Image 1 (cartoon, rainbow, N blue to C red):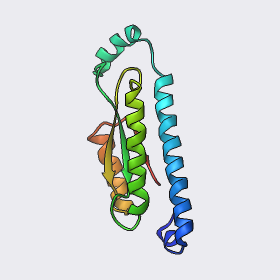
Image 2: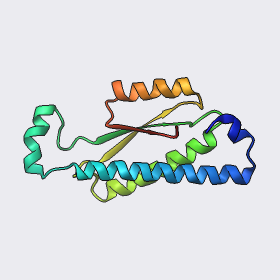
Image 3: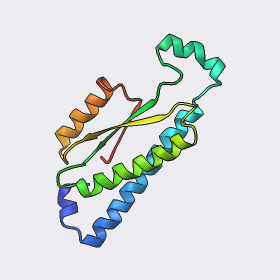
Image 4: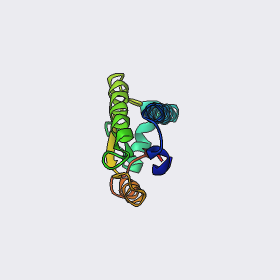
Length: 136
């Protein structure tokens, strides 16, 4: 959604958009975790592959999240972060994904497209995340 569209909205419309974006983000995260779980193998089958590709069995599943935690769209990004944190806590409380805890690395795009691209690149290249979620 463009910034102009958000600015021209009534407070009620902004709240509805925020709830919709949170719902989409939670559904996306749940789908990503379900996909990860579905790709899993039994621990015995996976041990050789984990050693071959450098992944430790106890190593967390790292997911990146690029959100507007500051700037003009922070009213959407901050609740999204809170929702993601609640979902990750629930998933980890149930044993994680194939016994591996989920870790989310958050990046603030400051409501700026160029910063969002840079943050996504950093998450992929430096943090080595498995997936990146964001408000788009």
